[in-house]
Length: 354
Ligand code: MTE
Ligand code: MO
Image (tube, rainbow, N blue to C red; front, side, top):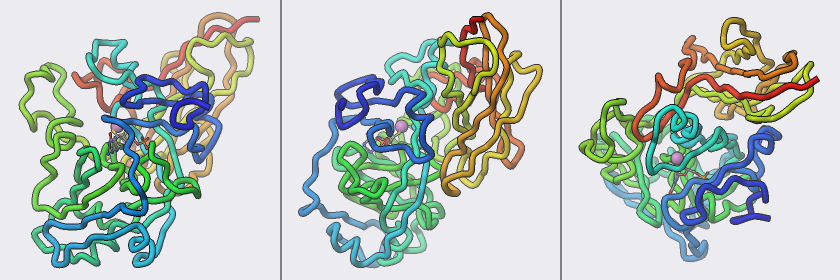
């Protein structure tokens, strides 16, 4: 077993902080990603907190500030389980960086995305117990190592947002934020703050640097080192995305029928409507078979068998959502200085032999 209980074949981009994603064929195997396969994104050391002394503070623009132990959270609020996909805003950054340099950022492949069954108390219920004041427009989260962020109050009070202590039926492990994290389905992974210590109702979005400074989509001509705080657009809601996972990039395969598969995920409030596959650079497309989703907040896995002649081949996939939005064609068109939100068509290159 590898670092933090991950599979031996995990791609570890950095050991400290621990940043790792599964290999595509491992991610492609399950609707609900096993914990040993789930990607992990950290800005500092994985925190080890004692669940017995752990306390969560709920404060800010509320009538009754709360301080809750894990047992109190479990006893006072009815637990709910939600299958939700988390996707890092930097997922598929390596493809962007291949088109144009993205310095100083983790070069994620297509697997900084995973799906788990999360169990916890709906944030809505905990907030209701604290009694948010009418001026509260945002709800901010703070983790034990000072990573933080916020979401609008309308999302914070939606039933799918959980203060989660369970992952895939077991206690939430430290590498995924145990003993407690928030899970915000439909938003970029950064808003699902791990080792959650504090929930604060506010008038304005969080001032935490990971909300106010990072995770902003700068225009292509901006210099990230010089961009003022607050420049660019603040990322929150996830964007429509899809990727080919199998066959993997660079593989040599027998010519003939080839099974192609991968994932698609829509943004908050949207559904994946269709996934198309092309083997001629986008002139012709066939619809992939979409698997049943494991829940309304889970990705759609898809598959299609295509015929490939001997020689080099390119397999491309793109998703549509139920608002008829489609992924943009080229990475050059979505390139941005910090390399976020690569939603371009996904292409793998393989070689087929007789
Ligand atoms: N929470 C804390 N406290 N510290 C972090 O570094 N990383 C965020 C988010 N929550 C982070 C955090 C980012 S950018 C992502 S994509 C997800 O956690 C990754 O969650 P995972 O490690 O469980 O896959
Ligand atoms: Mo992320």
